Image (cartoon, rainbow, N blue to C red; front, top):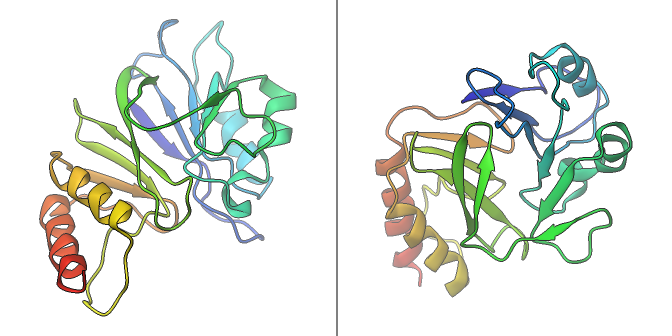
Length: 197
């Protein structure tokens, strides 16, 4: 699996946009965008990326949630590549498959579990690859250092689910990825959330 963040520099506020491809760009791999962001500058990186001969550059889009900074370019991406679009929001135009949580989806050359994580928004999801220990978290709050927040039971349950997985890297919706101590940080966050239950 190869992961490329297409948003590195830009002029507009936007989310990270991850292009996930297979290691060898095989025909069976599923070239996937995790979120589309809102800065057209990502298209430069997308068009330059190695996505395989005879394959669509973007075969599917998975949206971590429907906030504007994560989805604004969706209509343009759909016009350009006609991908299958998966999201947990039933209200977002252009979505082909509504995710409920618990599905397994092929991303690049790996299988990912869809985990419903309502909290930041009702339609927030994370994508977890058990083969690599990779988590795409969107804007789901995972690094919680204080005990003074208020959290819904559904979010606490989702955080418990994440803590039961072996997570070795987290790709956030904003900012750089986390490669060290992911499981420990998640467990600390769960302890802090439970203290104010």
